[in-house]
View 1: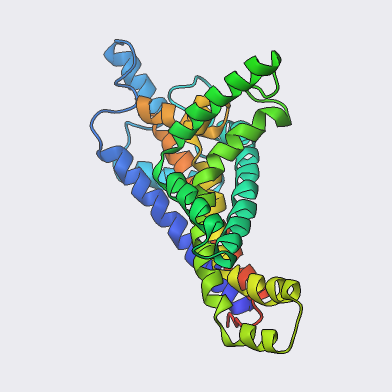
View 2: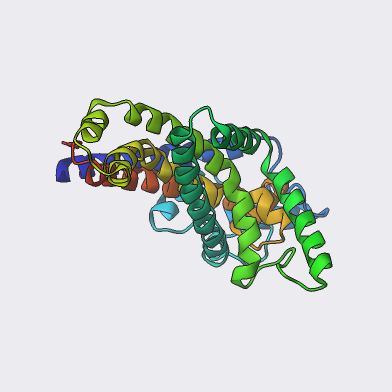
Length: 310
């Protein structure tokens, strides 16, 4: 187990290094630079700015400085936000995105497992047909459409009760989080429902389930101990990447619901060619995704005793 853990950690470090290198190369291969969008400045001021941010150095030297600072946990200073470091941006706004993501994955995981199990138990009957129709909608419709529909529903709900039942936008209390997290988790919930349904259908027809039925075990015990426990394994496998994707990928939802998360700053950085913010958030997101994948790989052996990671 220790050998496997060290191996996965080493692979994760190499993956993060590759992400950082690819991001650095991409940023320096696009036309223009972070200073080109500023107001007209003299050549002397521009040279001073380039010296301040290290843009006057050769590319290889810039790369070496970038990797060295990254190893120390320093992602640099933002070009577009005066005297603000990328570390401060991540530290202040990632908890907001993480909170939203945790609630979204809770909705998605609980709903995906529940609805997937129901569709398998009621295969080709009305519950299965209705849920699978909703699943197709959840996978096909973009999140910004659900976000707009969610806001419209909140406006109508508040008008009916002539009071603010749920806030339409903003951030602060648990009431602000419910609708955005549900909207953010709908796509993942639909995907997990399909995955859970397929896995449950395989388990239902397995030999050990038929044996349990022939022994006269209660249906509830068969469902919980034999069917659900084994069918949930594929869901656990994709849960780690799903957590990372939801936590770091709610850009549109954060924008529509005016949530001060990290996604907003990433989008603004792309628009303004803010190298340091783009590279810092990309590496941070990549490292977080790699970490979650490693955690899921390690937990998989605990969920399924048949797996021997060595």
